[in-house]
Length: 92
Image (cartoon, rainbow, N blue to C red):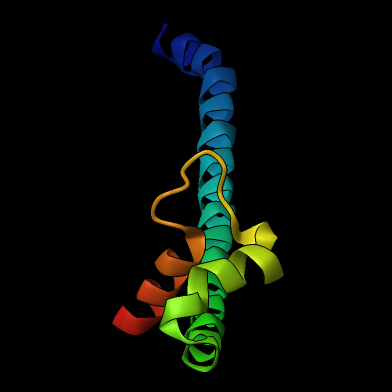
């Protein structure tokens, strides 16, 4: 009787193992994406810090809106994305 139960559990056990492996693979991809995003933000922040030094603090936001409008985050305008990436670079 126990042997039959074990045989009956095998398909579900195999399905559970596939699901767990799928989750592990998804987590691996997520961490790779996260690392790519963080590295990109850090590199962008360093570039923006250099630009801000040259453009000048007083003109910074006006200059950004004209020259880098793709940085504007419509869903969350404050703090602006350039500010977040520059802060990220400065703190790391």
